Amino acid sequence: MQILGINRVLNWLQITSGGRSYTCITKEINGELCFLFKKKWHKVAEYLSEYTTELVSEGGKLISRKLK
Image (cartoon, rainbow, N blue to C red; front, side, top):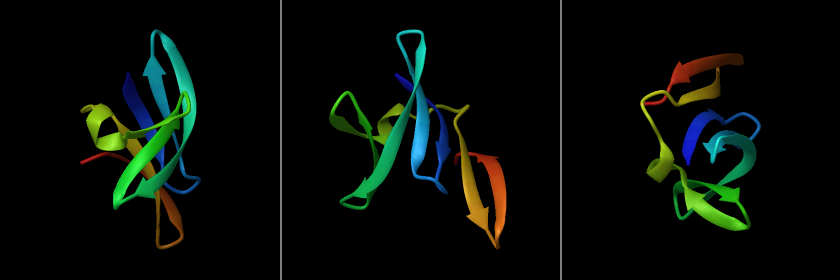
């Protein structure tokens, strides 16, 4: 499983698993961003890659950037 992109504005992300892509909701649990996949919460940090991007809102503008 690998995270493709995180949409922090709408609180969801896209992952790829087994050759398929899925959209999953996100929320913070104990200060860590997590996502719901197959009825289980997973920590985002465990599935990031160097290609993961995120969509954020800064100063009223939407910005897409590589996740650091």
